Every structure is written in structure tokens, then in C-alpha cells.
Length: 151
Length: 365
Image (cartoon, rainbow over all chains, first blue to last red; front, top):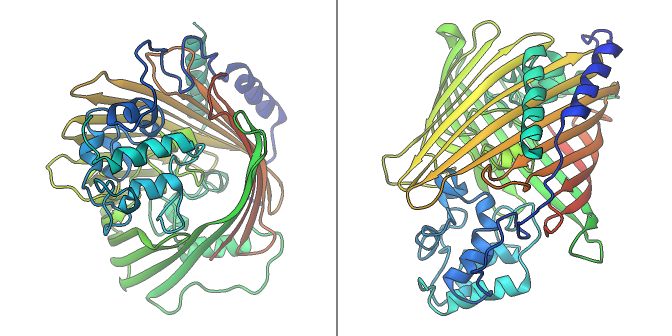
């Protein structure tokens, strides 16, 4: 701190006034669903199918980070790519486990991560968000148990 | 209209920051701005974060804390140095739109050790930053550093696994500019980085897999770079990245800056994120960040941060805002404690609209 000079109150007050005047607020959510996407009339009920999980979990929640070319750990959960990045693909964090082991939810690292098991590496998914609901996790487990088909 | 005004406002604030002064890219960027030092002055990784240099260790032990005990050298001998970071976090929900009962937890969030081997003095350094926990071991950074400033223009070459050079290296990975751009402590990548640091300039460019640490078997790669001018009272710079993947591409561009006025330190960053896909619509995001720090007394810093996110520029009224208010104290060397309140403002129907309190103990060496 000895290198710091004398505070210029006018400069600080001016800057703070500018910041207070210019900073933006959150959106009012008009016409959007709970995830901030436009309301859709073709919404799917949550079910143990890829299309339902994609629409209700992967796209609205997971792709906030796991999207496109810069998807963390090479796992993009966008529609059209999610199954290819999940099914029978070794986990980066725990290479001895598959991200999704068809027919075996207990041996699928995706399930471990969303359930927040003690033996995972890194944080519980979705990171810094509310954990998935019991129904959402049940749907994922059911999809895997039924073979993780492209349905 | 409101979104347009918001964007213009945020852009104007950032422009003011860039014009008035600076910002940076290190473990605690405000310290870098406050001192007028480059990241490489205090960190082995020249773009900031992770293990500290001898200078960084001396600074952390002698200039940061309220009370100083016996100085401890991090160098075991002429060629070997060690370091460590340990964090315990107590946090809880102060307001949760979806849960009637507040939740809280105490957890270890980081156990890491760093090893720096100066194999050929001022020319070849081997550096490893290994996460030991909290759940499983993993290598966060591991690279060979050639040159270490001894090449022309204070240049160096780095090869291995490292944090890519982009923007402010905030410790808080949850901040929109770090979470949404994908440049944070969770996403080191494997590749090569070149850098020069003559005079006030810091320029870094990296070529990497673009898979954030995962292996790959294609020819698509990521290039990321950052340039900054660092002066005693201010700094400013810009970053850019292009990441090609088989079915998509991400471009990120941004500017950052920071400046110091007496006991006040300000910094900020703006980023545009462009995701393009072969089989679906493109998504463009905008994220902004402002931080103000006030050094109340030696070892006690008051901090306020503001984050803004438009997660899809083509959708209106979906913006999110994140505020953090708190204080950081360095009671003695090796110890940092912080108390923060994080306020999220989301759209009214969101289930992610949660406010949190947190108390963190960080022991470092």
C-alpha cells in the first residue's frame, strides 16, 4: 500500500456515479420459460428418452457451459451431439469409467456427477447451479438403463 | 430497447475503464493492478494464477498480511521450490426461489501443491501444479518453460498443460466472464504458448487442442491470445480466441482494463462469445464484469463485483446479473480469509435465482 498515492475523491465519486447510472439489470423474462428460452408449444414431458432429457435437462441447463467447440472436457451436450459425446465414451476425469455405460446407470460417470457422489473428481453437476431434481436424475438413469438409445 | 440501453451502458463503462486505465490476468488481478506489476512478477505461470515465484512469495509474506512472523523461503535449494494452496469454504443459501429451507455446507474446495524445478537457470523450468483433492487427484498445470525471460524481448516458450491466456484470471470461476468464455481454473488445455514481455507490454499466444484438457484425435485446434500494456497506475488490454471443432466453432473476443486511485482499485472486462454450429442456429453471448476494491487498512480489502450476462443476444429480457459484496483479510502471512454475499438476479421465473453467503479460509504458500 505504500506505493499507492493519495485518493482523489472526485475521481472515485465520478466513476462510481457513472457505474451506478450505466450498469444493467436482469431481464424481466417476458415470453420465456424458467431457463430463459422462448416459450414453446411443443414441450416434451420429462421421460427416460434422449429427446425429452435433451429438451428438459441438457439444452436448458447443461449447455450453459457444455456447448460448442469449447465445451469443458470435450463434452458438448448440444442437441445432435450429446449422445455421441456421452455413450460409451471414457470420462476424462475418471478414464476407467464410461460417461454413459448403456444399460448400467450405476457404472455411468454421468450419473455419478449429477448425483454428486463422493468419488467424483471435480464438482457436482450442474456446477454452481441447483442440483438436478430427483425426477430429472430418474429420467437420466432410466434412459441409460434402457440402453441409452437415440430415442 | 432496455437490452440495448443495458448493452450500451455496459460497453460505455468498459470503454471508460479501458480509457482511464487497466486490468490484468493473475490469481488475484486486483493485487496486480494495485501494485502495477505484471502477473509474471509473482507467478511461475507468466499469464498468472497458480504457484508463486520467489518475488511473489516475498510479497505475499511481507506486504499483504497485517502481522508478519518469521519469513519462510519457498525455495528448498537453488533449483527447487514448492508451494501449496488449501481452501475450506462454508456457504449457504440466503434466499432460494425453489427451497423453503435454507441449505448450508462446509467443504474443502482446493488441495493443491506446486513444484518448480529450475533445471537450467533462467532457461529451462519444469512446473507442476497438482490437485490432490477434494475428490481425486488431477494435474491442473504441467509444463516446461523455456527462456523464462532470457529470450529476446523477455520472451519464453511454454509447452504442456496450462491455463490459456485470456482476460482477467479471476479466482471466482463462477463469474460470468470466466464461466461463459470457458477460460477458468477448471479448463486448462494442452498445447504450446509463446510470450514476450518487453517494457510495459505483455503479449501471449497459445496453440492448443481446444478440448479443455480432454484428448482429441482431429486436426481442429484452438488459438488464444492476450495483449496488455501494464503501467504503474493503470493497464488495459484485449484478448481473442478461436476454437474449431468438427461440428462447431467458438470465437471469443474481449477487452479488459484496470486502474488505481489511491486506496481504490477498479478493474473490468467485456467479452463477446460467438458459437456457430453446422446444424443449428448460432448463439451469441455477451458478458461483462466490473470490480471495485478498497484497501481499508493493510491486510483488509473491501470488494464489490458486478457481473452481467446476456446468454443469447437473439432473445430479449433474458439477462442475468450477479453481485458480490464482501471483505478479504490477510491476518498473517500464508492466510487469507474472506466473507462474501453473492446476489443473483435472474428472470423472475428462473429456478436458479439463489443468493448465497460464503466464508472461505485460504492457506497458501
